[in-house]
Length: 279
Image (cartoon, rainbow, N blue to C red; front, side, top):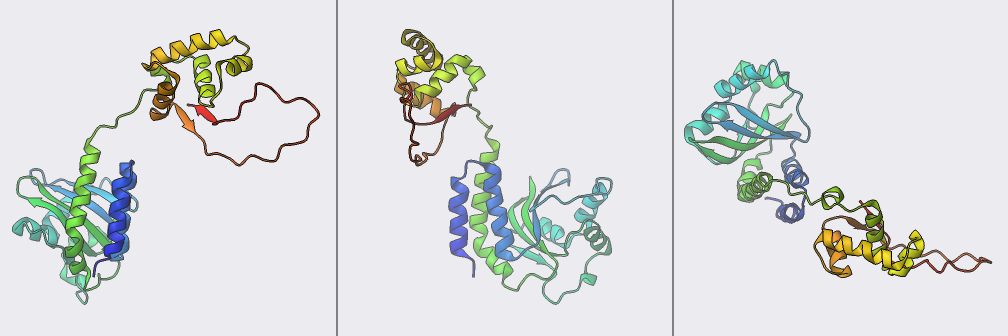
């Protein structure tokens, strides 16, 4: 029986993550865990060229690049499951070497290749897409001993969700990364950056001026320039936009330590508030 609760948790985490790489790792980690696999790969075999593209997990397999052209030919020509999927266009999970089957039943070139690249002969294929025009896309899981008898049944039960999550990741990966404008893009000067950081601490123009040794009038002039560059008209809008664009990073509030006993007067320019930094 499939680990339904585990897959629901993984789907929720994957859909919530902004980092596509981390989201894909959520999926591949669950595949390894749910089927007790040692490793795996997302495999694409292009129909038009017979080229094989691999995205391995949990880490890249150190293929001998000099042998890989031979390896591709060997897999295309001798792997029983490649032949099966190309001839049937099936989308059902299959295993290479069921419990009790011997590796002697496999073509010798394929066995030699798998040994040379450190890939187990016990393999579970979870087809994602399989058609004559584009070719075969699948997750292939490997382990040193046979997959349990329930593995194909569990794969069949979870495969619709796996396909959906994989399609979601492909769509996310196809979208160009949108990066917000940097400080240099916006054109804030070092003094303006400092003033925005102090502004985020809820400080007044007078307090900022005292800290910087300038007048409150000059602070207001700087703020007018900041508003213009950010395309806003007031303090609240400027701070909201700065936070949204990541120009200001809010730090967690820290419980204040007991005040030390001092003999001097308190600094009148000190203002409590949000501690921020400007990237």
